[in-house]
Amino acid sequence: MKLTRREHLALMGGALTAAAIPAGLSADGHTVHEVQMLNQDPENKRERQVFVPSVVRAMPGDTIRFIATDRGHNAQSNEDWSPEGGTEWKGSINQEVEVTIDVDGAYMYECQPHSSAGMIGLILVGDVSGNYEDLKGQRFRGKAKQRAQAYFEMADEMLAAEA
Ligand SMILES: [Cu+2]
Image 1 (tube, rainbow, N blue to C red):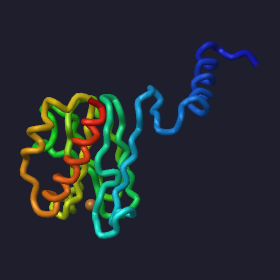
Image 2 (image 1 turned 30 degrees about the vertical axis):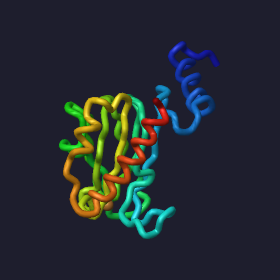
Image 3 (image 1 turned 135 degrees about the horizontal axis):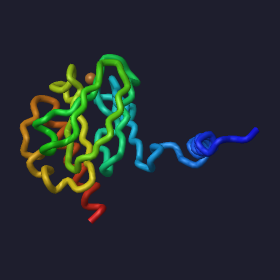
Image 4 (image 1 turned 90 degrees about the horizontal axis):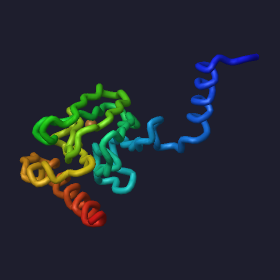
């Protein structure tokens, strides 16, 4: 059987996808970060309605995949908690959603039904210097206030480790 050049390339591409790209990398070489939407943190069972991991370090072009491990959650960006012109997304309840974030900055995002119950998460994309301090100064209410504080502390440590 003689393949056309296009068929040959298609086959090669398929083989490359199956064999050469490690799990966690997208086809273009960017990282795919998985975040689970959970009723309870398996590492700390007193923490309910959480994104795990709660803080993700990413680079522009990386993809975040929110996995609907437990029911009743979604993941969505919040304009007040995103860099100006930042990537926006809104997942449906109970649905896995993927977002590729191209715009540098710090993004606090939320689960719509549980935002005030503290179901928020933080993604640091590339250079966060443009809005990180502003984001830290935002108002977070109720349980989200306590979690935001904890997540900023984790983020500070991650960023300090890079310096
Ligand atoms: Cu939720």
